[in-house]
Length: 235
Figure 1: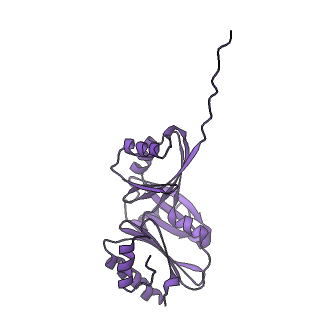
Figure 2: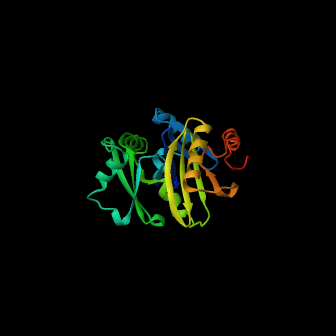
Figure 3: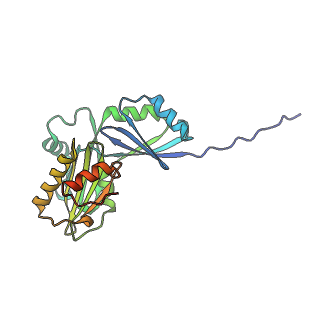
């Protein structure tokens, strides 16, 4: 006599996207946005994911996007695997590679390669938290430049995070500036933006700026920048 069989419903593999900031790990799932500081426990992250109906064991792929300032954009004509580490230390400081892993990403818009550093402790934390997932690393700068049009008039992209901003300036169809700038106050950020205006002789308007990132809807920050003569819209 055969016993009754209970069909097992297959579980759909899950992919996640995570941004790594100095402040921590940022998850964006549907309309939910959560930032976990680097001193967060794996249990707290797993519990939050369960609240989003996501089980760790079903996560098969994770796209990790770096937003930090440890990167070097090298034109293809000067790029060579032999000299990359030397270029990194020359640009970012001697010994900067210690405790980090180097990743590479092509940036066709700028005809360059982007080298960016990831702290090894960050990678270890992700591997321990998501042991069954394949993890792919990229950098926000390269990802944004892959989507950028060759604007003739100046376009300044501001990707605003907590206490830092990624600035991308496109002018005359070319990349003019790419930098991550740490700031403690709107005044400090505004001073930096005005220095860009003066250095590149930009006549800016509201259309010049494209604000993105988790802090781009911060109305207090936006109001402060407007008062400091940065032409952006108040939302």
